[in-house]
View 1 (cartoon, rainbow, N blue to C red):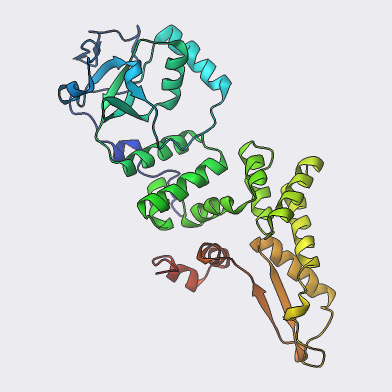
View 2: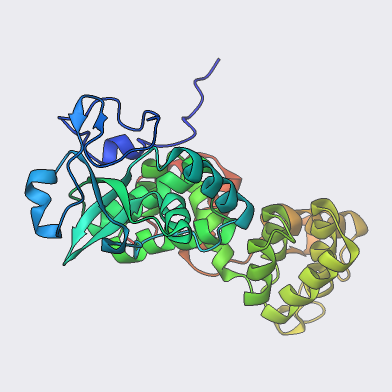
Length: 338
């Protein structure tokens, strides 16, 4: 019996140092917090008059004016469900903000690290102040923490997750295996997620809105032109096609376009035309399996070759993981463009 890979990486606790002077962080406090109310043995002083008081406030739960807290520049989540915010507002209205926001100093303000929904609900409720815990964190750590927090709650839609991975890769020069290790996922999962950004924009919107699934998107990615992707995606939505039907539709489209006369050898050069029906079936199934254009070319003597098209190292990496085997394992430790 093999050990399962953890669903997530180290978590927020490994990225933010735990406060030495506060115990029971995040434990429910009832009645609501107010200035001077003890939390786990630590008295909460009145709201801070300015960010420059942060030296004394570090690693302690403090209340600060809500107007001194600003949203994170690195928040990967763009959509927040109204019903979830409304439920949180009702809870805060009755019990107060139980779990402090995690913030870091930013000029004369506090930049949010974790607790975006609590912050938004507090703004809508027009609270005068909120409990916070101050942390020192680099931009990279903030993005990692925001990503992990949302992944832990499964709050990100597929496009937000893809954009967060790409941002980690581009802004902090992380390889896919580095990102995978941080979020506790396989490199193939991360690579497939990042590849969603190759979808045509309207198809990305359908995926973000939940009108199509990641399975649909994976099949549609086999189409190389944006127009083809858009047409097939619209058809999927209109006809409520399942993933298997979508894969068949894409495979049929690729099969119709698989024969490129410019690439075919002249008659008499050993090329059999057309392909036998069983090879056409195999070719169609391979297109669906790899979500890529696959062409089978048969020569004389029942010899031939199978061609899989890819666009860039990332897609080649994805295909190698699907194929598996020794070579895929060897490239795991080294980026393809090294």
